[in-house]
Image 1 (tube, rainbow, N blue to C red):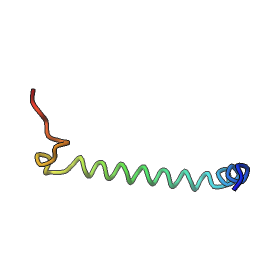
Image 2 (cartoon, helix red, strand yellow; image 1 turned 45 degrees about the horizontal axis):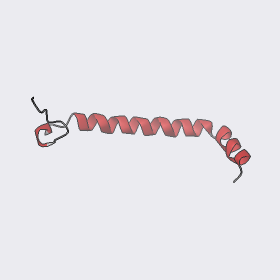
Image 3 (cartoon, rainbow, N blue to C red; image 1 turned 60 degrees about the horizontal axis):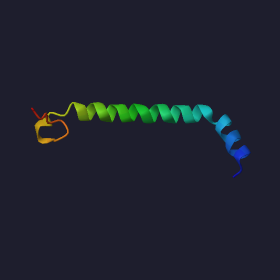
Length: 52
């Protein structure tokens, strides 16, 4: 596949790529929100606050 063919494909399918990226980001954000609302934070070292 040459660069001209790749560039042409990107221009033609730009709206499809934009929709896929938008859906991917939305799914990622939903997954992050689900993880941040976890009720068992004390068992997870990432959310455990260490007092100094």
